[in-house]
Length: 221
Image (cartoon, rainbow, N blue to C red):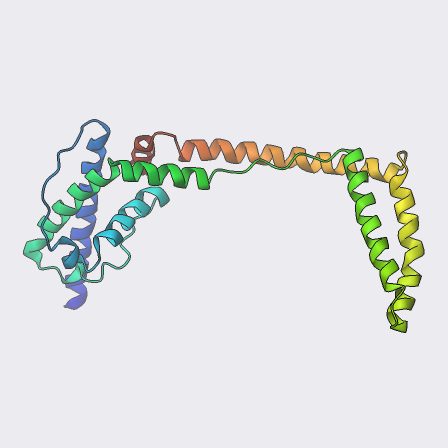
């Protein structure tokens, strides 16, 4: 019996959602007037106004129906459900047309925008970076070579010749290894750049500057 009641309520909820979406579609063409909501709307749903507003925002921005925390929804008396849905739809229309929603959407849009890849380093830049790293490593090893700990001193003395040779090779402007590494860096950058362009194009479609276009897309979905 309880399952049957829940099934009936689920159907009513789906119908209510469709009504809500239909009402929201009208905001693309019309301006809305405000009205006083029933004081117990959020209490009937079992959530605060802030939580309800957050759910509405999430539903549109993330593209799925969010009703987190609405613990009392299934306990609303059958005779009150229509009014609750009506009040909720009216509030949702007002909120998505508000400056608060526009600001939240803009912030969300900017925070999820794909980042372009870092530019590829040139052979000269990579050489400079390697020289600096080897110089710092040699300096650290030279300090360890002065250690009173025989194991550390031995380890440092054994590694210093190799580090100095690597520094010498890095300082050579004709070192082919630097060019090979720079070419690999360039190829990796070009690959990431193509990926970024595709992600940005998809992002622009899914996150238009005008929030009303986003709302329209969500309703179509």
